[in-house]
Length: 53
Image (cartoon, rainbow, N blue to C red):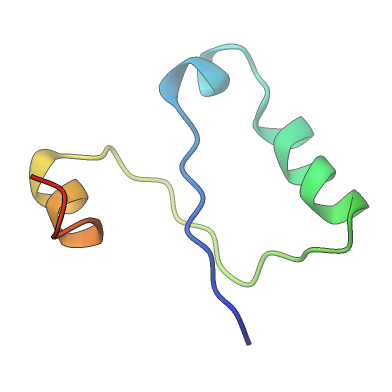
């Protein structure tokens, strides 16, 4: 099983686009197994992308 991290920028939340983004994934046959909403701190981003400094 493949796993992909999807980051949705804050402006998409402000504009109410999160539902549409999820719908587009589902339309092409993708499914969400887990969803977590966090404010991305420098520490969190560093953990996800350790080689990008």
